[in-house]
Image 1: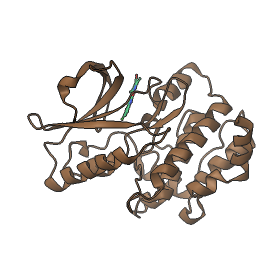
Image 2: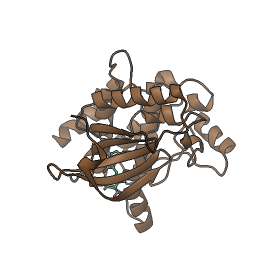
Image 3: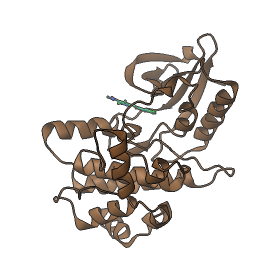
Image 4: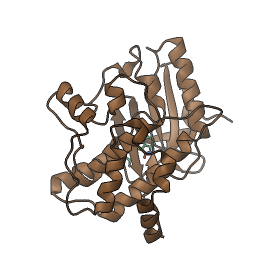
Length: 278
Ligand SMILES: CNC(=O)c1c(C)[nH]c(/C=C2\C(=O)Nc3ccc(Cl)cc32)c1C
């Protein structure tokens, strides 16, 4: 039986991004706490609406402990809005945690960084595993799209919708924020691929350590230059050479030399770290 808006009570708004508004909701039949992401599709073309539907159907297939669980979707034609109902992550998103540490002048523990690396890699492996011939590339990996549960476990969110909502006719046409995580291949107008997600993950892990992105500049042109040269400082000295080495591998400018998800998971440094965490 498909859900309707009346099946839920809205508790409150917990976030909003370039793709819409996130609300905390309670399912009336059992009191379960969930969220829905509201997205207005009225300005989309028919082909974009079809793309959005197929992206949501892909989300439905992604069932993994480190990917935000999709529950259902409601389409309200009276206000041309789609409501995507998903798992509630009470730890919020990584960008808030990074901002808090930057504000307080404190760093995140190395064990936490390794946990993020291993769980994000596991989530991306599931997404890059071909489903019906279609890889689900995230396309917008950033701390604001990494959510945490009450045990600080990773929940990758906002999956795959980036491709639909970046189209110039959709309401998300105003690019929000500087593309700090743009990969060298995208700067050079080449196509997005699995390795671009690896680059973004490298940028994210760097930012979790340093509390700022690896590449920053006062304008897009200078940022692009730094990205294409791969010019960035080492993560703070408090972090091990092992962690620095792994992040450096992810931030490899040459796509072919950048490790795949599988290569990361069998890297001797990651295997050694995994054994320590067991
Ligand atoms: C300050 N932020 C929060 O309190 C917060 C919390 C506790 N959860 C969230 C966000 C989500 C959440 O809890 N589940 C989600 C599933 C998909 C997407 Cl795109 C977002 C969420 C947020 C933004």
